[in-house]
Amino acid sequence: MKVVDVTRAAAEAVAAHAARPATAIIHDVPDARLVVFRLAPGQAVAPHRSVSTVTLTVISGQGFILGGDEEQSVGAGHVAVFEPNELHGMRADIHPFVLLATITPRPGERLAAVASAAQRTE
Image (cartoon, rainbow, N blue to C red; front, side, top):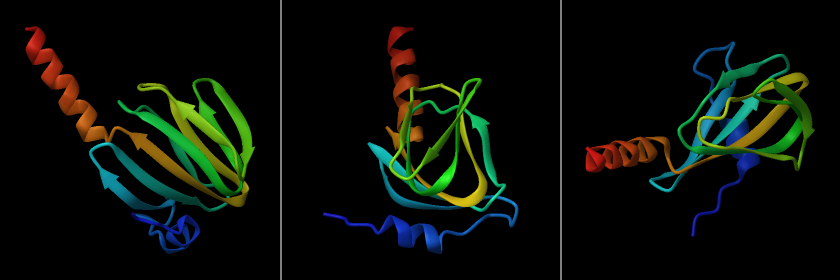
């Protein structure tokens, strides 16, 4: 069993650049990757796509989750689920915003499975 304090992991997360949100990978296996995001007021993760299913769980604060052309205000306890290749992103407004992203399966695993399936059909 592995137990992770997501709040602590978010507090200790490091940003690659001062203008970018702080992130920390807290679990990484072929079936799933868990990444905690800590966004300061005004910070965002630009809309992007993943080959995997992405579930965003708001741990603390308030902010916005972006999906396609829609933006929704969310707070602690809200969960948003995005299908593979569905556009998604997030941004903090005037409060710090902490989210847990669960990516299933781990992105590299999904790409390998898709490539393997394509080879079998050729």
